Length: 606
Image 1: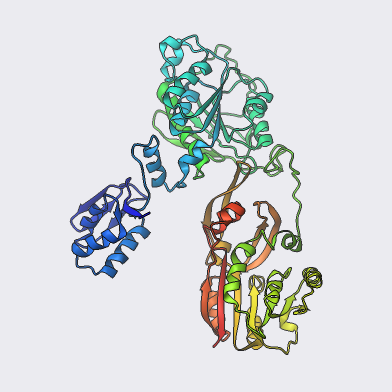
Image 2: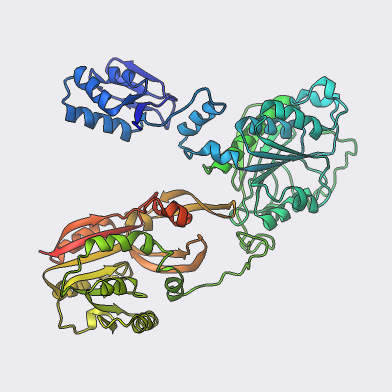
């Protein structure tokens, strides 16, 4: 099928003299200063879908560019996301939302994600109904909503889902009928019951991805939903108002943010109120909360937006934070809640199921290699196939594998006919290698224990492999000199390191739908070199080693160090996973398909 490209449908494009303005508002808007005379006409041409070949012909016919220059121009337009091959069916129900999701760089399958999510709503009053209308329109797959009240005439100033003829009907029953008129494609589950204990969350809401609480009674309801969230793993958020202020959040994500138990005694809402312990009861027994339609709509719109952003995995403002919006002047105050690691409710939250062992069991590096190295590691999905391409086993090929760990590469190349010396400083690792060698009856492998710098090796090797070792060494110069002396005249040194970009940043991950989801990677300290502390995760995203120290260096530092040691770089690789890994190892794929995890240098003696 031929691919067609066109300018982004959500971008306006204006030409003002020699300036071209693409988009309107930051951070997406772009300005092309001193644009060439032909560019505006070319962008107008791409208002309709065009094949690359047709576009090259048009550009060369309507400008002074050669075909090569035309190709380079189109590649630059694609790279800068000015033109795209994305398709939007404007007749599709969710087409305008899809354009918005594309505008904010949400996942390309954001609408499909929403269609497979379940949201709970506790309270179907002025805020709950407005949230429900937004979520129904957005195509959330399933809405579960509860309320035991009937509709009153005074509700109609803000509960726009209901009409005058619905007065005295039960809210949830009428809401189900009205929401079905908004979107007949979604599943609606009305619960004609007010929340009276924690078991109602267990019974009706346990499958939710997130629940919105827009009810404040009974007083224990916050304890109940918090307890259920820790048990079932769903996120939840509060939506309401205090006097003329709208309150949204905090969004509580079990295992990640502060929970209700963490912050309930820390004061309330930007210090406008004292906490509940100091004011145990309201002396005004005739109190009735004022409620105002626009304020309800304002809170509901922000909360619905936060829910959708959470479900599709983009940044949320209310995550661990409560917003207080002054409806009179629109000033927004923030109250940030910090997770208490000693919290009796969430401090040792078991991330995935209520039956999980919440105590963290530290593994050794040997345990990790034994359990996952062969088939379930970044090494197996990224490095092994690349090493096969870099190393050509011919008759009499000799390979020195430094830091061989549990011996997967040494054994692989021995089985292909190479003579192998497998070296490691870990006796545990080498014992595992030795047992494998005996089982496979591989006489081509010699096992060598100790620091390679201190070992006396007379032989010369066609290949010296040093994968994921140098990042544990403070001074790598002596080792490079040793490697150089161990190579034959035309020998090859292959060095792999954890990619400096990966080690210079951190993943932001969230647990939902039964697994860890890697949402965003933040590059923080790339140019800061020296000792770093990092953790090690298994194939499921669970931390198995909490603290490992290594040395972070930039790519430039590695390159210059290799050159100074008398090597020339003849190859540099950043291995990517094949697409099949998305099916076999979805969590590993989610990480290493977005950022580089390894950097491999192929070196020759100068």
